[in-house]
Image 1 (cartoon, rainbow, N blue to C red):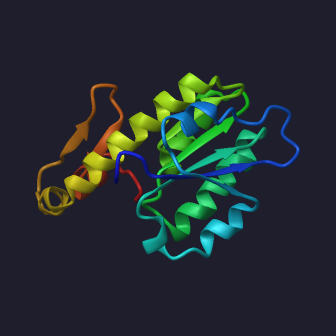
Image 2: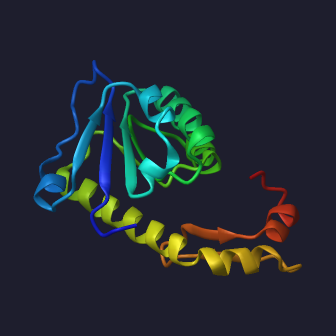
Length: 167
């Protein structure tokens, strides 16, 4: 992923506080607004290689449902979900679904920029390590790799079996 990937931003039309995109624009990110989440599903994966999706939805459940649908078509697309208050069960669900990061509304512009940069960095590491991942996946031992913030970067198939984690 390049340092400034394209950002697709979907905001629920009736949302009270739309995302402040000023810091993202000032940082040089190309922003494309998406009017329907389903539009992203139909895009070829090759068009989304240097893309990050931000979904802003007042309902945590509906926002997560959108993310889940998109990840069926584009499992490697990094998604940041911005939503209302969440609880621990939602957090567990979001991580199991494959959300890269989540934020609660309202989000200030500096925080949003910081999270976008973190996700870009993590995605760059994941893509750089793709050959390494193929080797690690063949290991008989369970292997789990996290970043300094304890975000999962890599879990091989053996570890998934050990901890009974679904793909």
